[in-house]
Each structure stands twice: as structure tokens, then as C-alpha cells.
Image (cartoon, rainbow, N blue to C red; front, side, top):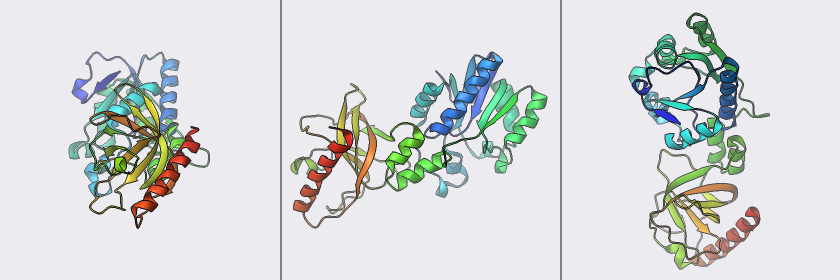
Length: 312
């Protein structure tokens, strides 16, 4: 898998390619559909290389930062998911004000024609690009007629729901991790390094692995979930009851974090370990308890229900 961080990184001798363009945040089933169509076009045209063009940061973070959506996947994670979906190389365009000012034709000529030598361009049917989002699928079709590439606009079907990154974020915002998983084709995950916490969980009999949630990253709504914790250094995977939030029962907690209690394990040493937390289902919303006794009673019930959900 080739990852090019700038148009100047793309080899000058790159042959003809099939190109798909989008933010690809989350690499949901709609994105996978687009990549499959790109792969099919490459096979039909006898092209060896399918390239995904994506943007970092998200264009909205530059144009209207106050409305920038939380990020579902890092570029590194996105690259792995796109490779699994069938992409051979990724061009990451560092989106800034200059690029935001490119006309659709300038983007087409600089990126698709001069850099990637596109023989076909495959995008979602609602794809917009260029200054003031003036470009659309019809723009690509017209340009391709004089620049020797064809264009395929793909409808992002999802039954009654069109799969989109926005839809996944909406699911997460309401705690509907099962709905997010349906759109993604896999459970939603949070990745990070386990940090030392306040050890309250250990004192209550439920030691947790704590992963901070960066403000720019997407995460499920505050609450308690069933899911899995995976050590990324060894690949070991454990069933877990997972809390997302700020521990409202205790004063002074402000940083949102993901706290995972591995079911029936109090012997794991995870400080400093990079982990992946996958969410299977929501158990309840976040509650501020009047006392520790009621909290411990509820945590025991959370663990019981998590075990039922996970089949343990």
C-alpha cells in the first residue's frame, strides 16, 4: 500500500489509474461500495492501480472550523480500511485555504490528470468539489470527455438509509452503536494508549483500562456499553463492560474517557499499552449516583448484562 502525503510524492512514472475521491472518514459500507465500483472499473479497463484521494484535515475544519465534524478514523486507520476494501494507493491532500480556492477544473487538471493520470474517476453520486463546492459528477463527466477519463457516480444505498459518515456520527451521538456498526459493516472502535486513572474502579472491584478521548475524535454518547478490548501489541481480545463519559458520581472529573472493565479479570497490566475498544451494544445512559453503594450495585448489573450481550 502506497500512501502519498502530497501530489509531489506521487511517482512521475505512475501509469494510468482509476481514482476514487472523498473524505472516506469511517470507510463505511457506502465507501466500500464506491471502492468496489472503482475496482470493477479498473478490471474492465485493464488498469492495475486504484487510488483513493482523501483530505486531511476535513475541509470543514478549514472552511468552518466551528462546524467541523468529529473524526471517525485517523488517516492511518483509514488507509488500512481502504486497503482492505480494495485500494492500492492513497493520496492524502493537505487541505488548506489555497486548495479550497481551486476551481473544479483546476482540481481535475492538477490532481486527476497531471498527477494521477486518471483513466476513470469513481465517486459517490452526491460528490461535490472545488471552490464553493461548484463541481459535481456532471462536471467530471464533461471534463473527462476532453481529458480521456470516464466518470462513474455511485449511489450510496443503505436500504431506507443512505450510508454516510454523517449518519454514523448521528448514531454515535445517540449511543446507537449497533446502528453505527450496521453502517460501517463492523463495530465502531476507539483506539488509544491506556493511561493511569484515579483507580476508583479497582477500589470498587472493577479495575478499568482508561483511554482519553481527544476532543476532535468521535465517540459514543456518554453511557455504559458492552464490547471488546483488544491489545494491539499482542492481539489478545477480551469481553468488556465499557463506560464512556466523565464519571459524574465523583466530583472533579472533566475529561471524557473510555473506561473498559475486562470481564472477570483483575490481573491485566495495561498501562502504556495501545488498545482498541470495540462497541457492541448500549446498556444504559450515564447516571449520577447518590452514593457508592448504589453505583457498585449498578456496575454489577452492567457486567451481568454485558456478559449476556457478548454471549459469555
